Image (cartoon, rainbow, N blue to C red):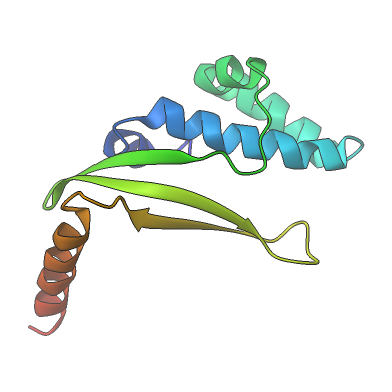
Length: 124
């Protein structure tokens, strides 16, 4: 999420989005305190991305923060999504992120139109 400039450009509330992901990452990191990979990863990210270091220092921890992410798509425009995280029962390392359109917005309609355009282009 820190290395992909297009995600940062797409996510209007990127900092809020990044804080949520880091809060979840910190929760899982707590289960692997002795794992050298995590320490190396955090060190590398801190040195490569100042934004990572700043947000990491805030020390937020959460298994599933509730958040709304706002995307601005080049063709569809502004879309709002609820972001939900699930952990697979019995496997601590397997998680799923689900984006659902925020109710009472036109996000779902925009997605439908966008998918129709993509489908039409694929059928050409």
